[in-house]
Length: 232
Image (tube, rainbow, N blue to C red; front, top):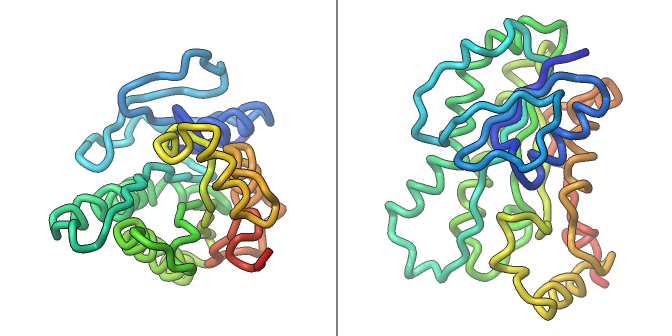
């Protein structure tokens, strides 16, 4: 049994990942912001943690962590000329600085494991330009840079990788998928003709955390229904 920390593990991709890890017999320590999942798994220990303002320590966690997954994010799409600099700063606080704080806080616990793995999240919009995505692309672009830099600095003890999804059917994206027409329109943009599911991303998380990806670090894994690579 291994110990894993998931920040943002109460819904969407974080919850799906936590449930898969618990199903495999691992113990998961998962943070929630305001609401606990309705059906709680006995293999998941929840604790309240508000990103990025919470200055709490992680002393309640075990001395050894085999992996960390940082899931908090935002999808705020708007024309560039309407985005005030302080909105960019707020987005960076959530998506980049929040991850930095957590990684620094639990780094001794990650180092205590024989080997460990960190999984961060980016977006397809970093490498493929979309209208009105400057806010999320800027902060997630920084996450990709952090991924590669930490992978170099932490090797060979700790692997660091990143997942870059396309639009995924989670609570975070409900504003963009709130009608059947929006869902179908977005599905048709993808070569595989469907929206991503939380389980698609969670399966990638499990791969990057586990021994099957033991020779993988510093990578940005695109899980996007083929949208970034195929014109179809």
